[in-house]
Image (spheres, rainbow, N blue to C red):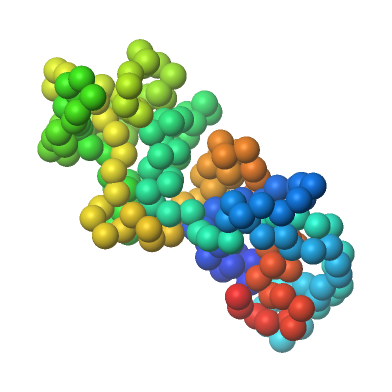
Length: 201
């Protein structure tokens, strides 16, 4: 993958989860924008060799999310599907230094909750998928150690509307959960560079 694309993908695709979809019959005010079909200049000749050569690429119409997926939205995804994929891969590394989404043990009492301490959070290797749990009124991943508690994903205060930083695979899984897909490298570069060959969005 060209180096420029590797830098751009975290900016809008993996980080922003700029989920794409095929064009529909009419535009709707749902946060997506139409990137019109056409040829554009992809790559560059004045940079690293893996970004060369500058060449023309034709891309069909597609829709791209206008705004970046936030930490709060990705936490909702984790609550819905679990932190471990069907293949056994962890979808999110909450122990990373820049992680803003944290597992929290929460007491379940009817429809109200009270957030508990993270000291009761199990290790990352001990977090199964939500499909292994009984159905509850709250979006949960798994029970915590204490009786009457469940684990949910919460965002650090002040970071709910910040773009989430995740891997390409995790971004793809989140897009699929939302009924969309990640844009291709060519789609992303066309959307980011525009018609004036800008290097960055």
